[in-house]
Length: 427
Ligand SMILES: *Cc1c(COP(=O)(O)O)cnc(C)c1O
Image (cartoon, rainbow, N blue to C red; front, top):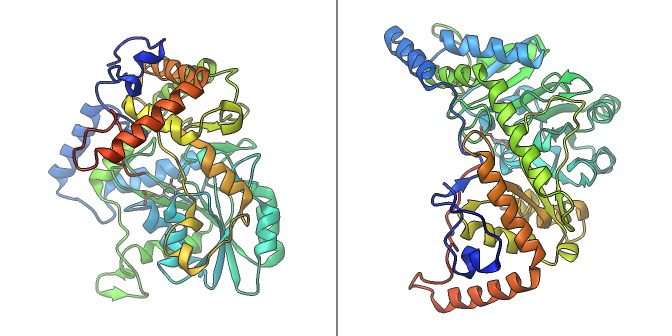
């Protein structure tokens, strides 16, 4: 897969060398688990001719997710965004809800889609998660709730948020899309706040092709969400409330169960890759590898670097350009932050400097490929490239400037510098 060690600048693809990887290496390339088990389950689904609507695999998946999260109820859904929307609606959130800007856009859209205003709040630079002091400062008479996001699977300041929500009479929901199978103070993420939402999108480390779930210990809330995800049907011909179609299919649950069978193996591979990145990039000035608390359960599904441009002598974006030319499709999660995207940017402009920690973070972070399709040779090759770039920042910058000029001159001919692709991968 790799084209051999790169130890001189001329070996880099931006200097004319062959790309390190013959095929693009994506962040969030799906983990599949045991293919024969998956196909066996899919055959079962076909034999039963029970493709969706509370099928046996969805029920088994819900049970296993609830067990793993240590909660009473799991309601499986067709994706994480619809799961968020239904949880928001079931919790009767209205007016304004406080969310971090530093999250995937779905957290904000799930609110705005139902005319609830997301109020963006800054993060704590120590954790990259929503800062409870900033949440408190953002509360107005219109505020009805808070959505915390456990970014990278690292827990929010759960206790402080729970206390604040209690004191101010607010609902508390967590977007736990990154945090499946992670713990906080020894307790699994999933059981905090009023409810928590997982995503099992193809790019997440456990996937159901498309899928999501809400987990909660609140029986009434769970029952309400079960109605809402099935058009409000309480039985044949009996609709008792407004609902939508949020159901997970049996094939999706078959994939989810197969991933759960391999959960420990997938986490072990993620961890092995993470540790190899961390070792390989240790001591590089201006390059921080995001740390996980080893007293907790982590899924290690994200390998995140923070590039301090002043110290490293090269910007995050320049490093990303170099990596992309090597077919290493590093991603700038979550650039530029929800408050800088539409419709929020126009509707509710945030002057520069209002979310200073978020603004700094979105310039620094990048995610590297990991998961079951990345092996140790791959990690070693990527580390070597990052080290080579950081050891020669001025030469690399100069070369990228030439490339940018060439690309501008070559518009329409498609022959700028190697590897300056524009294609993006969802996630
Ligand atoms: C993936 C993700 C979502 C959306 O989940 P889908 O299943 O893709 O709809 C929401 N929030 C965060 C933080 C995510 O990473």
